[in-house]
Length: 83
Image (spheres, rainbow, N blue to C red):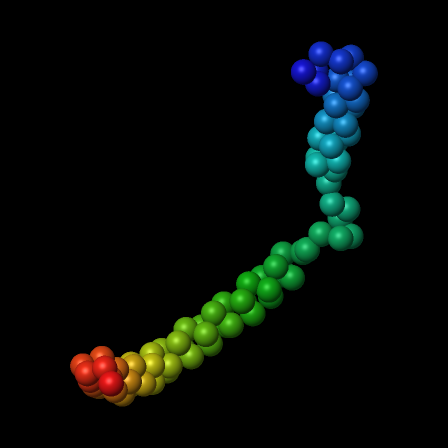
């Protein structure tokens, strides 16, 4: 129904055209990341990923032990008759 009103329809077309032009505007060369910068960011990200994977590997056994320690306590409390 909006498109049946000529003034609103023309404004919609204008706004769409302006939006599509803005989306295709290139980033100025001075503001673009260079290949060296992107490679440095990738390297840092990969190192961080490896550090987090190592930390996860160290924490998994601790978590398994903690959950194992809690299991007998939960089993006993679930089997105890209600007072």
